[in-house]
Amino acid sequence: MTEFRDNLPQLSGELFLTDAGLETWLVFQRGVELRHFAAFELLATSGGRQLLREYYLPFLNMAAREGAGFVLETPTWRASPDWGDKLGYSGAEIALINRQSVRFMAEIAYCVPGAARTVLSGNIGPRGDGYVASLSMTAAEAEDYHALQIGAFATSGSDMVSAITMTNVPEAIGIARAAGKARMPLVLSFTVETDGRLPDGQPLGEAILATDAAAATRPAYYMVNCAHPEHFAHVLETGDGWRERIRGVRANASRLSHAELDEAETLDEGNPAELGELYRGLRRLLPNLSVLGGCCGTDHRHVEAIFGACRAAA
Image (cartoon, rainbow, N blue to C red; front, side):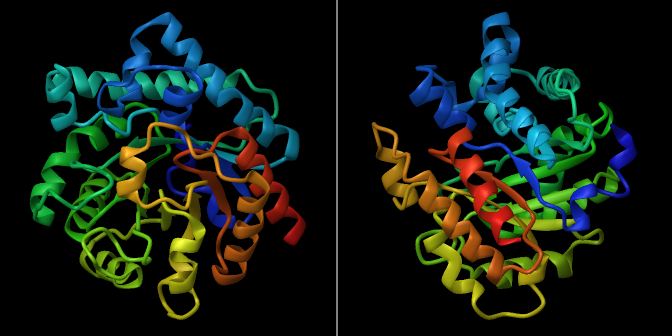
């Protein structure tokens, strides 16, 4: 799908869908035990690959049915060197897993009639915990760390890279530099706490502007993920020059904080219809918001409600 690399179709402003909370769907709705939240391990078995098909295909069929584009993310949020080491994989094995994930996702996309506007994205996560900014890195260290995973995507047919649940600016800058050197379009998604600030306390707008200023190749656009809309809508009410850079949202269904979610033993699914209406409100605050999906606790029902509310508003 390399024809999209230099001209991502979701930049047109048309509505695009993406998926939801893969890991929480697997754990709470399918009873899968994920080591360190690593969904990529399912790629190793036929049963695991079938579970991934059951998760992704309804989203792709929804997009095809509604005439919307789709950003298809690989299940590789944890497929980076440190997490791979914790799980017993070498760096070479992790690189191979990332390349194999792109091929597997491409096979899924080709199974869906009408899914021609599917953008295949190599998904990467933070080096540390996605809920806390506990691991301090320089931008140079982050660039070196994430280069392996980004390089694997660049050589396996991925159209872009998505860095999801970023907690701090130095890591974001390093990822942007690594993606630029690999000539891969990058979408960078920050997560925020209940006060609308990054886990390290930096305001969202400042984080976006600082990343743009320090990266030789700027991200194609930004997203916000793994937070309820009410956690960050208030910070979007003012601020020129950075709100326009946000084109995607993958919100949680739950209003719980990251700390509360980390301790939760049951799934807080929230209310899909309510979440859809909150996204409608976000579109009034974010003039370029067009990529719509979910994060922890969300599934196909939530994304369908989100798309319905936003399409009606459009």
